[in-house]
Amino acid sequence: MANLSLKTTIEINAPALKVWQALTDPSIVKQYFFGTNVKSDWKKGGTITWEGEWEGKTYKDTGTIYEIEPGKMIKYDYWSSMSGTENVPENYVDITYFLDEKDGKTTLTILQEKIKSEEAKQHSEQNWQGVFGKMKEMIESGQV
Image 1 (spheres, rainbow, N blue to C red):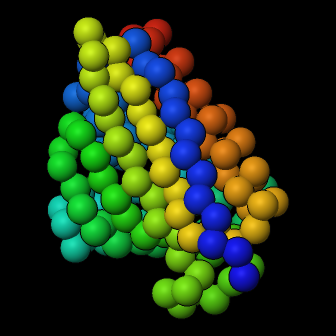
Image 2 (cartoon, rainbow, N blue to C red; image 1 turned 60 degrees about the horizontal axis):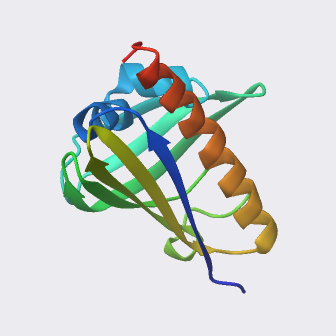
């Protein structure tokens, strides 16, 4: 079994706190993240769930926050109910978001670890760029 990782970045013309708000505010997340309902207390050791419907199927994805520094970074594990795998620890991936602000612009870096295959890695990278590309547009157009 492969243990791949990917790192992808997106530049957002906004301060880190605005990007953080877009990452953690359920009403904003729902608008750019496939209509998902995210629930979390955003505290270390807390859970995160993502629920919704995609192509006619309902899903409930889950994870636990390992580390969190509001406005700067969050690391959590993640399992998707649509992955076709059992909800057991070895089927979780680790995801970290890093926010780095310089001169009012923020670089959002997404690190995903424990990816099972090259195909899954490419799929994830496309998803991240698509999802956070939409978030970037919302922030930069003043919708956030």
